[in-house]
Image 1 (cartoon, rainbow, N blue to C red):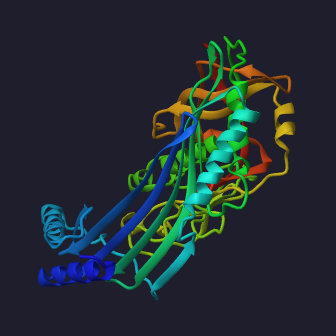
Image 2 (image 1 turned 180 degrees about the vertical axis):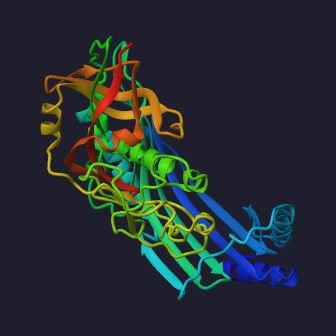
Image 3 (image 1 turned 90 degrees about the vertical axis):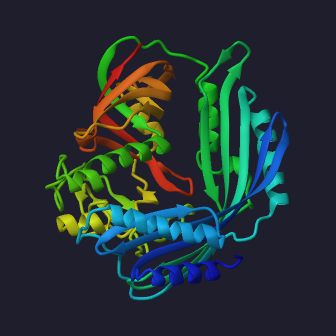
Length: 432
């Protein structure tokens, strides 16, 4: 079956034959053109085609789901039977429901047609610039791509969506290297829509490359102390996502545990922190436009000047607890620029770290988090002394977000988040 609408109609008819009146259906096809540059040349150029069918049903107040990567009639019949079997095996719950939309949704945005010749030129230019301006960086792999998706969504509770999206992306893997000295592996990803400027100028690229060079110069750090930590934007977004998932998402809200469960419309963080989840923002290119419950996504502020305004939950948890469902699925995190330059943030650190990434497991239910600081640097008396190795940091996320010392003027827009540098006080730091 070739056309998405034909697939959607076929699945709807199969469900009607099975007396299924409540369904959320997603039919998607994707086309990703990808080129890989390594060892000084383009080593691979390929096109990846994808087909995805998602079936979510409610029958007799039981929920069943299935997902396949095949548009054939036999596969679609099997997927419907799988969803029905899943529902029959489950427990009935009046909380199962799909969202209501007042109108249909039609979106066509981004770069729908790729210019792979121009993209290849930009990739070669980037590789040349790295070799020339960052000779101590070993570029292990550079993957550039153009992704296009066309998705149809049918919500039996109201609304049909027709969504077409496209954007470019680059993923770099590299390490500092100087003869017998090698730094740890590093990487960076950016989604973008324009090929008008060199890729080296995309947010975070130069910073990450220079960091790889600077990591070749180690500082000795052997003691334990409590100090300030400046999280680089990519790591800062990870830390805030940890906090939201740990305290304001499905599990803690449904189980009514965690330090934020009774904090709606109350202070949960420093008053200089505002966090938006905004997939519709023009700066966000990797976005989810339909929630798992079938609602058309809308932007919202989850934390406003330190006050928790909304839980990051879906309709099922909302019906179980009475809290409002979130207007989107949590993509597109945005923290706007602060009023402190990064250099001034560093100058205000007596002892601490500038952290590019953290290797850690999931935080505990009460927010305890510990891990190894990667791509990170020791700061003493307002100056960066050198890179650190095998240095642990530990913190309680609920306490951490109350201890924001500064937010930088500099902001990275990577197409999936917009984030400044965040400086937190009271972090436990342990050298090797």
